[in-house]
Length: 286
Image (cartoon, helix red, strand yellow):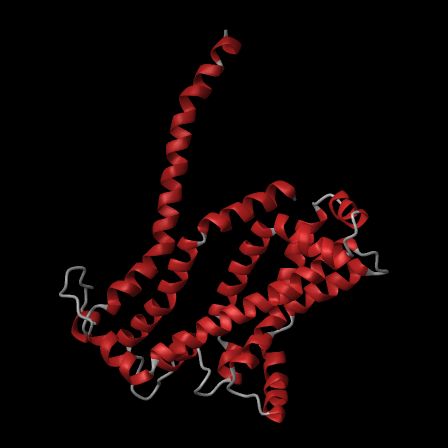
């Protein structure tokens, strides 16, 4: 009797478990998104409303902080710098990292696995250990406070990340694809660019997106290698938060934080189709 009745309780528990999973997902989303919501809301408050206790959820929104601080701190130029550097570093790292990943996946090199592991372990080096030597080299070459300096600096920690991800993607592809192309007259480079790259485009795009987001939020290298001309949005945020003389300007801090976060959110929404496709194909291929 118990054997015959056992499927029914499972069917009855299934909708409840589904609802609990949904409720748990909603709760976790609210917990993680509430700080972002509070930052955006605070950026539209005046100074009096920011420091009220208990906090005000209903208030008269104002753009005073945005107008005042953006005109005073040249935020628009810093935003453009961040876009230039993040895009340049993402493209450079995806080109170099994907070719390195393909070499480790396909070319028979003695110690290739060890070599790849060493490159990956370089991600564990503390950034501060690299920032000072980079600054000394950049100053010697006269390249401090330049976009190209930040692009190359960011590539040092992005290329190992891209290489390892794309190596896993390339390993899952059948070797017969390149062999057929080379039989038809393609070189190794031709087979890579004409056959492998188009097939791997979802994985390349998803890795590029993650690389650009990592470069977008990087602070230490931008703080050390730039001064005024090429400084980025994280540097602006650090400058506001580190104002110990007058105290942190919370209105300006939340406004600049919102300006920094919103482009990333819009970018993620625009490319989510390719991002999800790349992640799904990488998961099924791996």
